[in-house]
Image (tube, rainbow, N blue to C red):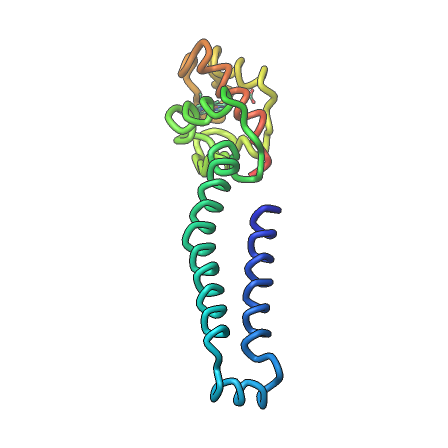
Length: 165
Ligand code: HEC
């Protein structure tokens, strides 16, 4: 965010500078300049254009790539930073849990089970639900949908993101 803001501010500064130079001396000055534009002035304007073009052509893609790399891949919606295993858990969730549960961080809107954004389960509760299943009269969650590291990772992911969407 800060990098992007600095980038935009930089452009505003360049843009305003060009405008001020072009119209320096007010409307009368500009009209006078139209008639006797010096070669030096043209060259200067050209090099400003050149710099601005390069800055746009290279700067914007680089900034976009950089921010994608830093933010999007590791952050679930809601701005939560995920560890590597939570990122793995996110994939597990999409495959095994999202059909039945609502979780905004995964854009999941399942209605069979309770909304995880509302119950915000700690990792241990999710692990227990996965291991034993749940059937307390509000629908059924089969036991052992995932196990081992997958179960731990998905539990950590839910604990980190539930209620943050
Ligand atoms: C077939 C649908 C279904 C799937 C798939 C499913 N669940 Fe559930 N889940 C439910 C239902 C229904 C309940 C509530 C059962 C009850 O309380 O009677 C529930 C309850 C829960 C609870 C609350 C447990 C508690 O004690 O309050 C958690 C946490 C949970 N599920 C996490 C998950 C995770 C993580 C996954 C993916 C590994 C998953 N669920 C997959 C249907 C599902």
